Length: 99
Image (tube, rainbow, N blue to C red; front, side):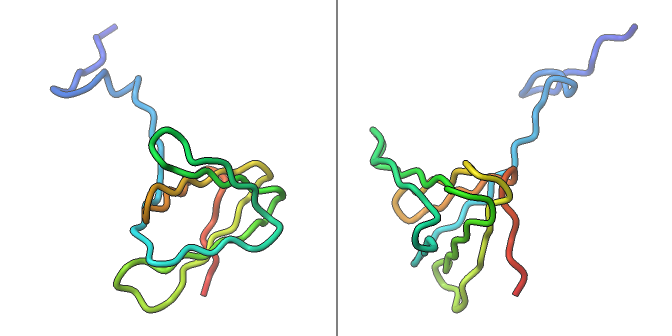
């Protein structure tokens, strides 16, 4: 069997894991009241918000944008992170709300 191809700057492709994260530089972030728990700040000054239930909602307005973009957790315990004005939303556990 042939050795897996190794790219110049990483492990063999078979060992790679894809992690999807949406990041937004936000002017405003809103968490629907009663649906989230907040912890933090951590040593970096970041906060973590965990959904208390499936379908917990949040909305964010990115810097330079006029409207809000909505997201909903697809499972209880889904987490987002906020560091300064940067919102980090993992692909796993969230879906974008349609406008």
